[in-house]
Image (cartoon, rainbow, N blue to C red; front, side, top):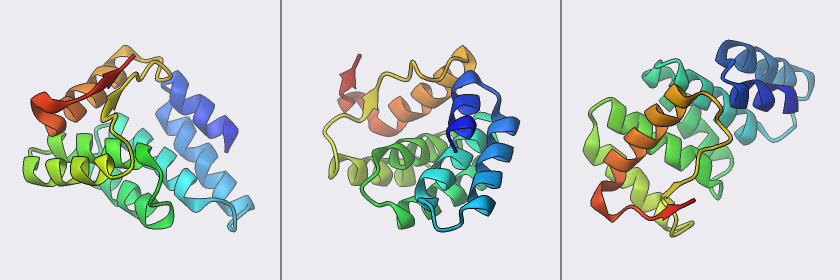
Length: 132
């Protein structure tokens, strides 16, 4: 699992998906929500928005208190042009944390960061709270 997230942060999305899927197979009782979130993020960065959304929504079912899948699902909806759904996801996120848009420096690929942050800002509108 850690290898999958390190690959994700490094911008190696396909390898991240592979490692996270292997981790799920090796330990199916582990925190599925974390794995699904990582896979969803990698799919999002690969611009496979519909597949990413499926994984992110499944992650939210498994781990509803985890803010990251809310952020990426909101960005995903926004990138798909589904702004009402994106704003609804932001409302759910605000029930967990007041910080909607935060630093994404862990994602080393600048294109990935911009894809995520631009989608999240679009979903949050002008009321976004930024935490550097």
